[in-house]
Amino acid sequence: MYSTMKSTSNIRDFKYFQNSLGFKINKLSKELKRYSSKIIKSYPSLGIPELFTLNVIGENKKEVTIKYITSVHWADQAEISRGVQKLIKLSLINKARNHDDLRYTLLQVTSDGKKLHRELLKKQTDRNKKLLKDFSNEEIVHMQKLLDKLLISSQKYLILN
Image (cartoon, rainbow, N blue to C red):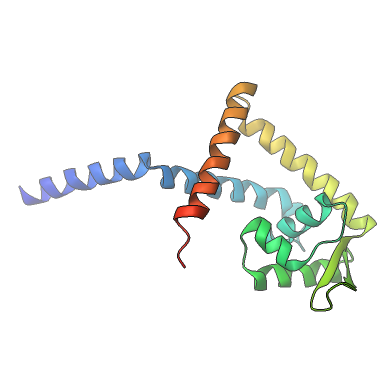
């Protein structure tokens, strides 16, 4: 009798877990990362950190710092630094001295990096079109607003000091 009650409780807990906001966001994040991993498989020298880094640098018209990239992607600075070193070795980005603040170096995408960024951006755009295929434009705009609001709330209320 006890084992039956326990399994019923576990089923209820699992159903709650599946319906929780955190579970759904985490699941979606994992699916997007999995799909991104498939996208970059044809580029064996690149990993997810390099993809994030190339996206941020490629989207900016001006040079950026590692600190800026980590703030955009809420990523670990050491992980981004390793990705930057790899991208430099692959001649996809350049590193230059910041004359305004010598503590930071500036990163800029090379012509090969721009070409690769455009290829990857097209694949990511195709992924997003597939993902949002069943949504109307109004639903997409509304979802963007809700996600923006949720991100702001998470930064306001969930950050542990």
